[in-house]
Length: 125
Picture 1 (cartoon, one colour):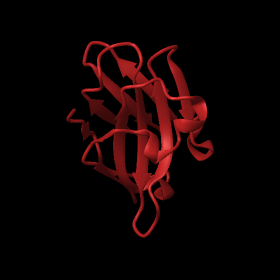
Picture 2: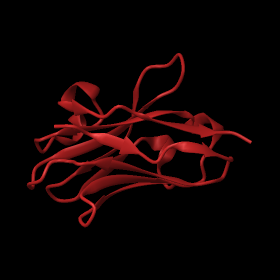
Picture 3: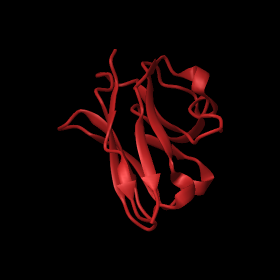
């Protein structure tokens, strides 16, 4: 499975970007996660979407600003990022498991089988 993350770029604080992850698996059981890695830091969980049930999970610091969703037409899982802050600057990666991950596993990097190449998001004035 080849994942393709896109949509990164340079944006001012308070601005918005929309990232897309394509193609996730077809079927009804996959889980897609978005992670990010800032320079000198560990890769961290941002958000996850569980196809079965449409469940969504978020890192606390992005709740209310980021929204993960599935686009059935484009066959992507997107991350809408609003009210961006300089601390959101990172390379963003999408990852996928063909399984319906249990809730506690959605935020764990090791739960995912496939990874995209990453897209850079820079929030700066």
